[in-house]
Structure formats: C-alpha cells, structure tokens
Amino acid sequence: MKILTLIFILLSCFPGIYAQKIKISEPVRFLALGDSYTIGQSVGVSERWPAQLANALGKKGYNVAEVKYIAQTGWRTDDLEKAINNQLPLTGYNLVSLLIGVNNQYQGGSSQTYTPQFDNLLRTAIQLAGNQPEHVFVLSIPDYAYTPFGRGNMNISNQIDQFNIVNRFITQNYQVAYIDITPISRLGLVQPDLVASDGLHPSGAMYSLWVDEIMKKIENQLGVEDIPDKNEFGYSLSQKQLTVYHPLKTSDIFIYNAGGQMLINKKPVSVKESTINMANLPPGMYFLVLRSEGRLTYRAKIVLN
Image 1 (cartoon, helix red, strand yellow):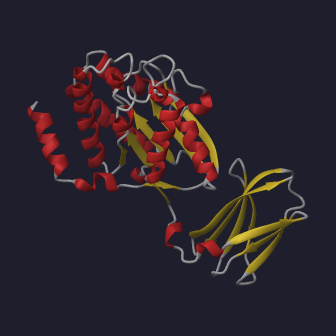
Image 2 (tube, one colour):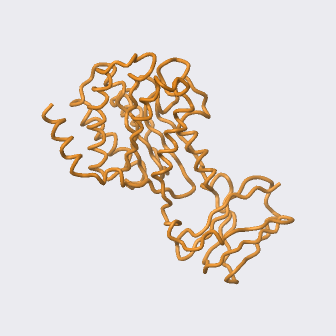
Image 3 (tube, helix red, strand yellow):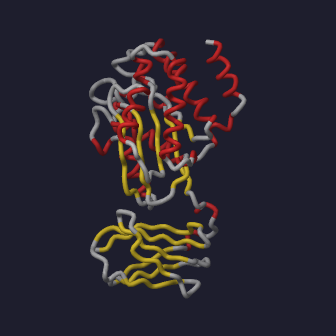
C-alpha cells in the first residue's frame, strides 16, 4: 500500500501525463496487444475498438495498411509476453497499443506482481514501434464492476484503480500516451447498450467512445496542423486526369495504393497546381499526399471508378 501511495503522489506531481500525443505516420501498420478487450470478446470483428480506430483513421485520410492483433480472452501480462515472444520477429509497425491487466486482477494477482510485468510489456511495445514512444499508446483497464456480471462490486473497482495507478505511472515514465477509458466503462450500468450481450464485455457502442478518446490524442508525425491555409489545398478528378491544387510551395506529390505502395512521385513545376495522369491505374482506392521539405501539407483519399 505504501508503494501505491507513493505512486499516487508522484502522479499528482506530473499533470502532463495526459499531454502526451500519439504520432501517426503513413502507411499505418497497427499492432494491438492485449486481452479480451482488444480482441473484442462478444462483438463483431468490425466492432472491435482497433478495427473502429482503423476505420476512423481511414476517414481522416490515413492509409491503414495493416491491423494485427496479439490478444486473447483470459490473458494476463505473462500470457501476452509469451505470445509476443512466440511471434517474433515482429517488424514494420508504426502504431502499437497496449491494454492488459484485467485478468491479473480477476485471477487474484497483485498489483506488485503486475508492476514489473507491465513495465516489460511496455518496453517491448516501444521496441516493436521502432523504439519510438510517441507511436505507442496505453489504454487504462476498464472497470467491469459496472456490468451485470460485476453488479457494482466496489472491491472490483478499488482493485482496478490500483492496477491503473501502476500502469499509468509506468506509462508516464516512458513518455507514452495514456488514454483513460475507465470512466467510460463505468457507464455500463446506467447505459446498458454500452455492454455486450454477455453482460461483461464492452459493446461496439462503448468501443466507439474509446476510439473518440484515442483520436483526441492523435497528431500527424509531420505536423500537418502547423501548415497555414491548409483548407485551400484540394484536387479535382476528370477522365482519370487528377488536378492537384497547392497554394503553398510543394516539393513532392505522391500517389499511394491502398496497400501503402508508392505508385507516383511527381515534382510540381507550378506553384499553384499540378496535373497527374492516372489512366494507367486500375479502379480502386488511392491516397494523394503532398509534402514540402519533408513536411506533410495535404492528404486525401481518391477513388478511381
């Protein structure tokens, strides 16, 4: 208890824990590490929160090339560590999530035992993201006391809080983004639609609320938010002739396919607009990316019919 008290005091000294951002580069290759909450027990594949996050990123114009799960219902921290080791090498991921610990609590484990195991897993997650902490994020453990299964048992809530104090402190120590979804999970008894049909796990509707919180933490790796007048960028497509409008000086125009493969790289000759012939490309979804001196200035999804 003294250890947890000290951690709580230390956390109160670092209010910037919530300021960490998740930086996204494309194409996005997302590795989701966890347990039943990540694999989406009792919901459809498209309702899992990683799948919903991929969809949300796609709507923002990001090219999500892969979503890989290493997660299973019932896993504790040690189970997840073994599973990761069994699948090594794992390379090429630029977005990694970690949500683990509820089964440590449910199966009677202590937060003291959980501490070094979670620390090891977070270090592994950072390594799998190319040793880039800003490409990793941690989700807090949901509180299943606020489900028909948990029946409002405050002992569960108190224990979940202890585990979350630990994982939050460790996450801060590694300068990784921490998304506190536990308050959302505590809506389960007053909003039954947020609980899946099994009476225990989140529904797709609750996972959607989690994704909203994750998206608030995301910023582009190359700082598109800092580009002035970005709303003046755009394109038009006629007869497979793509006209790209770029009011700022643009050094490169790229076209990627849905799998993240670069198909076209053009150097603009005009300051205001450029034309690209896409007649040789088959129908499908493509991504237009503009960069200026290495910085992303514009991104859009294009559909060829």
